[in-house]
Structures are given as C-alpha cells and as structure tokens.
Image (cartoon, rainbow, N blue to C red; front, side, top):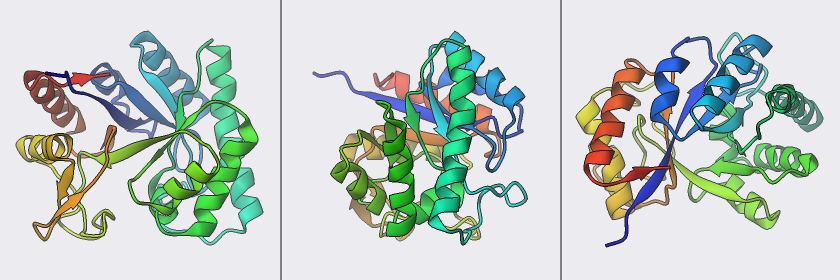
Length: 246
C-alpha cells in the first residue's frame, strides 16, 4: 500500500506571536510581508524559525490594508496592485537571501486570495507578478479557480490548496467569515474534514453535498482561535492514520 503524504501550511508573521509553537508542526509556511501585517523584524524571525525546522518558506502578500487585515476587497488599479505585491514579495526576498535560504511558494492572503478565485483581473495581476520574478516558485491555488487556470496557462507551477479550518460552499468557495459557520473550531471536526478530502478527494460542504476537490496542501490560519492546539491535534491524528506530513 502506497504511503500517503500531504503538506500542511500555516499563515504566520501576522502579529499573533505564536510562530514558535506552530512552525514545528507544519511543512510549509506563508509569511506576511507588510500588506496586511508583518514587518522586517517579524519576517526575519519567522524565516529563521522556518529555516531551523526545515519548513518551506512562502510569501503571503495581500491588498495593502493594515486596517482591515487584508480581509476586505479593495478597488485598486492593476498597476498599483502589481507594484504593491511586487514590493511586498521583494521585501521578504531580501531577508530570505540574507538568511541564505530560498522562497518556495507564493500564497495570496485574505480578500486578494478569495477574489482571485473568480476575478480574472485580480488573478492576472498575481500571475504577472510571479512571471516578473523569473524564479522557480510555486503558487498555492484553490481547485477549479480562475487563478489556477491562468497560472497553468503561464506555465507557473501550482500546488492545490484546501483549508483545514474553513467550511466550504457547494461551488468550492469558502463560507464567508461574516457567517457563524465559516470557521471550524473543533479538533475532531477539523480532522474529519481534512481526512475526508485526503481519503475521498471530496469535500463535505455546509449543505452536506460531496464535491470533488484536489488538495496537496492544507492551510490552518495562525490567527484562528486555539490554532496551536488544533494544529497539534491535526498533526497527531494524521500521523496516526499513517499520513506523512512533508
């Protein structure tokens, strides 16, 4: 029987301060680089932690919106958005190079990520930013999204991402954070949610529908309530099922 393996990623460097407790239990991380959170000091701290624990490093750029933590849609000209995203990634890249390590992936944050699922204009800007870097970085994308299609057309390597701590709608979009059932706070429910996607390649939505999904990496938000405890339990349960986290 073939051993199953997955990647677990976590959003970090967002001012919560729990990175040292989260990083040992994941295989990749997404570092806030100034758009919604993050400073040179926090970026360097997390880069060093990730390097110490051999965790893959990703950039986590967003709309430049510290006030709303990057979780509200913004209307920006394409050129301005391109410039902001490029500057955020470059700021992290400078620190990564100074720490003699590498950038593995890029994962947009919050409203930017969600809009890129359906919005061609937003998705195009993100893809163009990555193309302009001329680096062999991966892009974390949701299955059956606009940004997935555009990235593949541009020969950008992708990794399919699903969310460990979020509920899904029938169209594979995430349940809005304005809804009470958007987040999963129970450790057992989170494991069942993730294991079902791994084992069945389907996700159970809030209507109890079973929708096909591809997932190679699973995200847990670092600012989720009890994130450390939830991540530890998920890590423990996956290993108990013989699923390697790599």
